[in-house]
Image 1 (cartoon, rainbow, N blue to C red):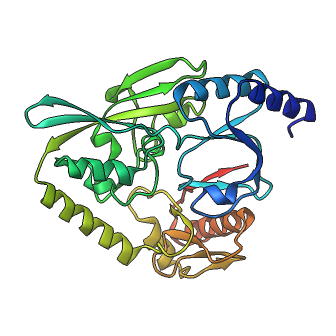
Image 2 (image 1 turned 90 degrees about the vertical axis):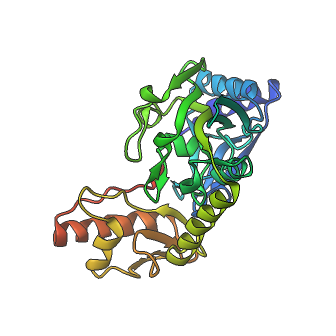
Length: 310
């Protein structure tokens, strides 16, 4: 637990540096699950310099940090986060494009930009390759962090390079072949103190109308099959090798299984939804029981895709 001396020291340091922050910010307001207690410090840097200064002050004062994008894959503890949550959505400058060849264009977007906005920018420029990501509710930074994917596509298929701050807040850039991007993982997951600033994707020229049609098709499929009308964190479990998590859960008779305010969606068994008043404890208990039953009945081990932050 953060000592009052540490809390006071960081508060004074942030105020002295004129960095934007608040205290005791309810985290349920900043995640798609709508669950979580307060953050001791809620920091909202608006540019790279403010981010570097904020991170440096947190580390100098030995206050732990959690980097947050759109909060679409995060479940905060009911007690909250006794440290500094640094929101990265302020780091979303305009998309910049660089023609590389006649049919290839590189687009660079800030880590805080939503994937939806980046996909819209690509479509408006007549650039194909990102259609699969148009309905993923995260930010560019979060998508790179976990190598987000859908409908047969993944970020690793299009990422050219990523710029970030390392554990010393030094600015660095890594090319795609150094990012260790695999199924729902990357080098950034293995180095959580690194902070993604921007990503460059390689797209190819296409027909804007055809690109829009593909995006609309993916969005309609999501709307038809996923419980988008309820708060959730997207897919609750990673796909086990040789099977699909949602199908295994359904086969075990767990459609609609409920603990407190948390429920396995009746629309899609791969989702855990907040039916109203769900707590972090409810979600954790539900997912652990689902894991136990699926292992017992099928032999498959399910791994949570949702990041639980305590």
